Image 1 (cartoon, helix red, strand yellow):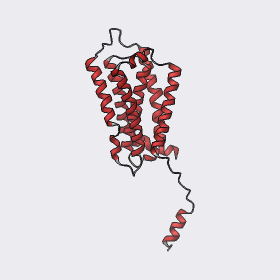
Image 2 (cartoon, one colour):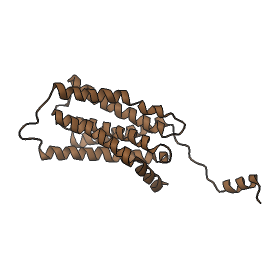
Image 3 (cartoon, helix red, strand yellow):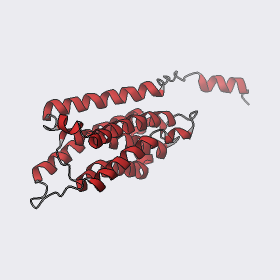
Image 4 (cartoon, one colour):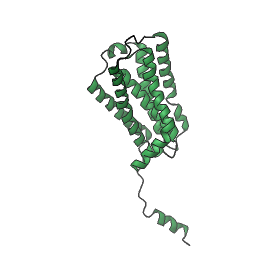
Length: 219
């Protein structure tokens, strides 16, 4: 019968050192940096909405934009923090205060500045551009986040997926407001709040599978 020290030595003889992950804040900043580069590339390729400077002078619009961006930033930081087993789950509430500000502001705009879409409705071209922006922003950021958080698969996949998806949804909503001029209140709810909720719901439902799949593919 093999002795315990010999067994340990035999098991560890061929093991390779594990590369230590960078601190979660640094990794979150790296992802946010990639998101900023992506938004700048979209701005160069498509151009920002022509009335952006005018709209930024509107307090409600500026507050909504800032709240969406800060929600995305805080949700990304929370996702990287709670992906580690030694960090408290209370980091889940980090983006919640700003999320409340964002959703409250959008609701306030809908109640006080209701704008009819008009008899012509939303043009198919503008709707297609909105969906393409949604895809070009959300999909790369989601895949990158999955790759960077793949080691969280056996730990807290659902919590990580929800916060990560909220980060992607909030930044995507900010991108839609930057590049598209649809400002009717119904469309505000659809594009801004709806986008974030869809991403968060997908994270809750498919988070465990998607993170696990990414971990196996990149291992």
